[in-house]
Amino acid sequence: MTNSASWLSDHSWYLRHSCGDFIKSNLLDAIGGAMNDLLLTHPFSDVKKRILELSERIKESGLVHIHAPANLSGLLALSMLESAFLDTGVKYRRRFLSSDQHIPRDERVQPQLPTDGLLIFISPFEDTWKLEELPKTEYIHITPLSVSVRLGSNQSERRGALDVVAQCAALAAQMVPNGQKVRLLRPFAATGLWLREALDTTFDPIHTAVRDHLREEGAFRMVPLPEVPSPAPGMIPGLSERMFSRLQKGWLKMDIDSRSAALSELILPTLTHPSLSTPRLEELVWHRLMIGTSDVDVMSQIFLAEKAWPEDSSDAKIHASKLADSFLKTGLLLDA
Image (cartoon, rainbow, N blue to C red; front, side, top):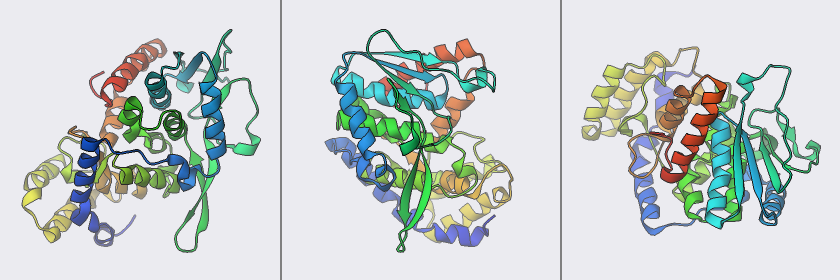
């Protein structure tokens, strides 16, 4: 794990500049600022042509069927597409399927082609495919894809997986740029990457690139943990909730040096906890994503939604459908 003092000093500029995110986000909310094109970002360079082709294929279809597993990743991806269909008036039917945890390990849910219309089959946790190796099918198969990004002054190439939620968010925006429902769900476009295991081992360049793109367009504001009014408890093992509560109460009265020292003391016990990687801890401490006037950040909403997910397969399908309805109305994963 990283030394506490150096780790905090590397991120201290967030303490100075997080208010800029607040101004940018709220101004964009007020004036209806435009979404930036995800397809112009590095993670989408390899798949841009595919997204454009899928968009046209959907527009040409008279009826679309969306099938996704009844888990949180499936719900998020399906909802991204459904938001575009609601904005454009595309006729569609959705169906939540049994998730991987409810079927034997040696089995896999197979797509069931409808008698009419176009099927979109979403597979959030299927093995990552190289685009050129993805089989051609009668239906649209949304699955994690291997993509490359170039980082730093040397433009060194890094590869990663572009998840199904980000793909569906880009596809939705391509179908209806700045659609009302599409904009409502936009802050969750990077949450599928958050749910994947890449951040549990190392820095994920795909997640960082998509998150920063969304921040720049004002989809959310990025703040340190003490500036979140109501973060979900239990997300950071070893964190003293009592110390955190005291820090929150005094945060606005502190100068930068006092904030750094207090945050260092709060986080120190968590740095050696084996269940949380440094990249994920960094996101949870420095990069909380806030939407509009909600007191609960995006990561907390994801955490609470996962925690409340039913274990029974039938219950999970019903829950997913109700939560999707609520999500599409409010843009939040709360109070389904």
